[in-house]
Image: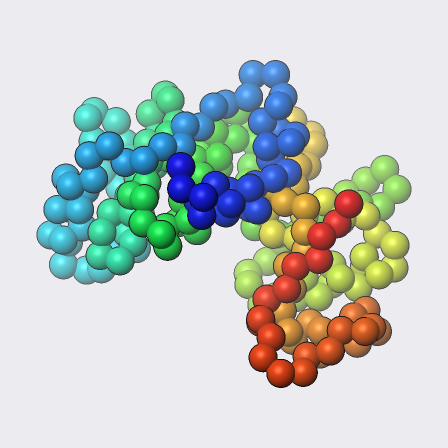
Amino acid sequence: MSPAVAREIRNALAGYSETVASAPGATVIAVEPLADPQRFHEAAWKRKNPDPSWAQVDRGEPVAVYRHRQRAGVVVRLGEQLAVEYDDHPSIAKRVVDGILFALQTAVHRRGGLLFKGAVLLKDDGAVGLVGPSGAGKTSLLLHLLAEGWGYLSDDIFLLFDGEAFGLRRYVAFHNHHVLAMPEIFDGVRLSGPRPTRWRAQLR
């Protein structure tokens, strides 16, 4: 596995690897280089519409294929054994994480759980989920509640499984507009000169 792919997986799924993956009976999702990418590349070239992903049957099992730069970048095998295979391109890392999340969603669904795009905060003995499309204000509300003493579980993706919620990463990702709109939270942060538009605050 390339260093870029390994790093992206660690950043996106650290919480999963430390909690759900260690549970008894956890589903194993194999992540490995695509052994024979050429047949999938040919399928990508033949498609008239540049679909970002599509489904097909390969070797008798259903697969989902993610396009990357006019090639078949990631193949998610959805048979009894779940697997994510990837064409080891330097910029493929985020696509690999997309494939892992899809395989994870499939595994959790098969066992009666759900995977959500959203945030989870903790209060007393309970948890509150914030679910909505990008731009709805989930991160802004989460940051305000964290400043008021709420606990953190997730700001991006979380699992509901067997009555419990699991977060998949240990940091909050926020943008410049959060810093500008909430100076009382980001006291001491200054956006002078070139700065990344996306920030991370590590939580322990």
